Figure: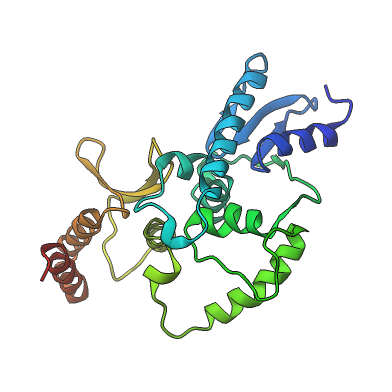
Length: 265
């Protein structure tokens, strides 16, 4: 099917900002293209579908490039951005939330030797996720650089930040990024299991509208979802967990603290 598979992957990487994967069948024909948790399998509709999806990806990138500082981000990052921005898609994959959608044998479509300004790299990675911006001294944020150069410049800044003993999450991370991190912590606990906490009927899934990870409790007939971007959801899940583990005083105290925060005293 392909005269030049690498060229096809390069073009696909370009229009999808490097978040597409392809799967070939045994005859080396295209089986599907995957972006995030969606697989495109209809060869006839695929070009139109990929172009439509790539337009949404580019729009999400454009939206986040309008913000220059963490403090300028909206109270909640729009669901559209979380669903379609390459940084969020990559973070979901790296965190393992897309493992159920991934099939062995997929090939990534990676953009090679891409050049952007320092500010564009910063916006398309850290700021898009809701992380604090970093501007090293004596650097022109409009200078064009490759990704490897960007990482070599920003790495010392991140290393010094990671060594901080006390972290003010409100200062360094947007609330939605921190909510993602909290869900990821629970995901790791659920994946490994915990002998000291009853985790029966607790799982995680991606929200339909934003693909943001949610916690889910209960059975199919009586299930409830918890969105950690909303403080009442954190309280509800903590209460549920405390009720499931009546002898766990730590969970009970945590639920009481959260309740006081919501009530304002």
